[in-house]
Amino acid sequence: MLSEFAVAGICLPPFFVYACVAVPLFLAVRFVLARCGVLRWVWHPALLEFAVSLCLVSALILYV
Image (cartoon, rainbow, N blue to C red; front, side):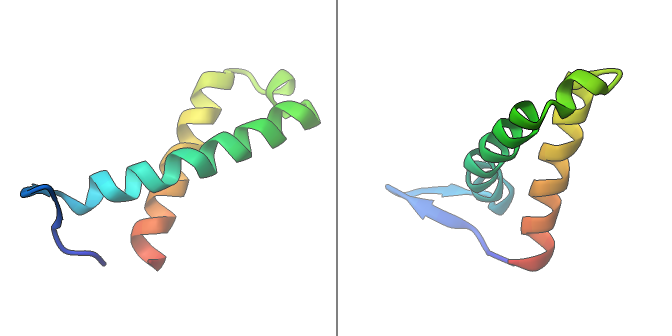
């Protein structure tokens, strides 16, 4: 797990860094889900996208 990350003298929490890394991963997964048509078959697409983004951030926190 990362400790505080300093950018231009400003200390950022590790969660912010993990969330910023998860955004491009989420966009790639969202593109794949939309391309395969999975988003049309779920009850609430926004809820699925939120759950996927939460899983990506938690996986980054656990394994990086």
